[in-house]
Image (cartoon, rainbow, N blue to C red):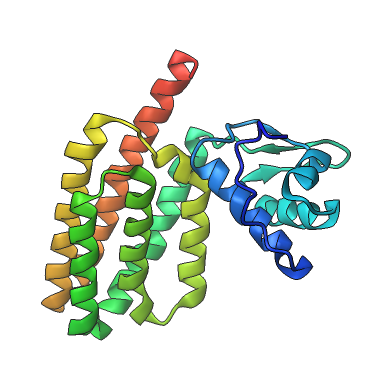
Length: 230
């Protein structure tokens, strides 16, 4: 069990929080690529790994199945779900619709304190070289922008879509650190500027373009990896 690429040292002692911890650990392992597509998840081994019964493991797997990260057919072992190119395109199409709407709805209610917070997050992204932390900052930037819209269910839906495809956004390449982050943070700066000016339609357009460009890059890498057998 020591070979499992899943953290277990901080597992909580209280039973009621065990499934939350296990779900978080499995989600992180999937999103980081430590658990690859189609990797099997054995409930007995996972229970031993986390030092719990199979009940919280089963609850965690059900939660991740609902999030679209795991497939768990009846009487078969759960596996990490592979996301197709079509799935990725659909996720970004839905994100563009919802996040564009959230942006336009939020802009009239974004105050100077929140604008300053958005600028701080974007500055942190410019100097962050760890891709996982960069993505976390990106998620925080967008959530901070959308919160004034007062649509928590829509924001949760965006987070669900992000989670399904996050592992394919991790590039692990020199080009991401230089070209990709510069372009994305420039677009973030434009979003902040338009939001400060009260241009809700303009900010929405940049967010939608921001997502379409990221979609195109992710799809290109996914197709390239499939062609090479990676």
